[in-house]
Image 1 (cartoon, rainbow, N blue to C red):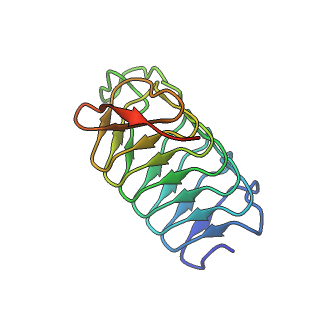
Image 2 (cartoon, one colour):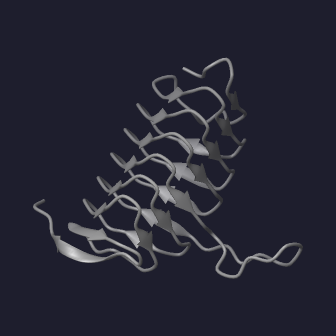
Length: 151
């Protein structure tokens, strides 16, 4: 289902996925089955989203982001994809990977080039500056290891 107030140019969005109002999905983006892309999101061309993913309101997914299956992205999570951004200069794409069953809390910032591990959790408002291993909870600015999570 694509809401009538959304613009979904990609043909790689299955009918089982919901695209809500004021969402823009560019032509080459790939979105899996049974996803929920909430209002006011933007999904660039070089983005891959797996199955059963929820992207809450106000999230922009830039080129170079891959999100595996069963991931939860909280509202207003911010992703980056360029370590040294400058206007009108060459851009060095940083790839970001969010692995299966990970959860990112509301208003967190994920710097480009990191991997968030399988079953990992990022607490709300965190600043992720480095890779987070599988099955760990991280929180803070910058995000730090809090504890192991049960699988």
